[in-house]
Length: 351
Ligand code: SF4
Image (cartoon, rainbow, N blue to C red; front, side, top):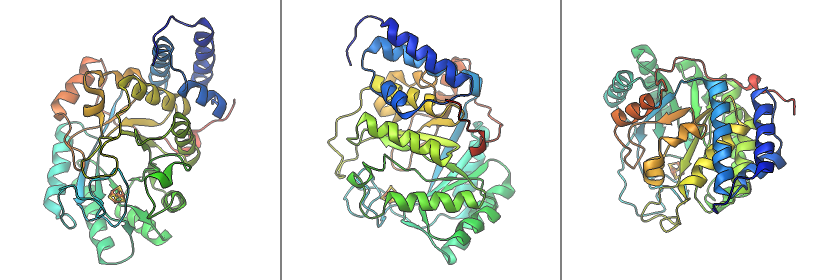
């Protein structure tokens, strides 16, 4: 990224797009791509300032916090090249079967103590079918719901029938995490054991069941800026309520272990572009935050993020929750989120 002087033409165009989004309009693909392709650091800081205004307009000072429980670890049949839990790679990551009620209840209690709105049950497997395992999953969701400490979320891979989605909804599931991970074009570069279409099909079943969608991706896998742009546009299209932005944390033993990291300012730029494209959604910075952003972590909010994954990730460590809460409060933001997730119908089109 070059550092030159402030460009008045860029400033004017950013203002035009930013004001349009704040007024309820949308940006189109060409405009979004222009934002992703800004490379002058002075322009990028200008972009961040507009993304911050959009966040403030639609999200106020609230920050939505989520955490996850690794509900079934390791030995996954899929070959996602970024993942420590794939059985295709030797990574030394833990392996265990589906989680008992106690660790889930403990995670929910800890979440409540730390103002964390949702706890997601995340399982390393291809997907969820009808059978005894689905019964067990529904039991954990029901127990969390009855415990009443936190919103039970889940991320349980591909779903192949409407009935599975309906059963999850009946158990009390409100939101399901299912990342598209990258653009349709780039997806086969990191996974060949299932397809982008299967992911979209899963999301369609969930939406039909009335479950809200948490879906985002990972940056830093070798994708282009155009791929990031198309991912954000696809997430707008599917109506994701929560959009996690993960940054690759290269895991030793995976095919991506030696990839170069995305520069921190480019990560912030990506978050800002997502805010322009998805102004009302919860844009959540998730895995890879600590290792990739280091001292710039607190800038994610002034780049447009409105949500944060706290606590440890599936196979890697995060900074302590207390430190995150301090960071949020130091910025004058409020981690005590109690709103409703935005639904697809809030999307407007007046560009
Ligand atoms: S990302 Fe999910 S589906 Fe892919 S290998 Fe890891 S656990 Fe399996």
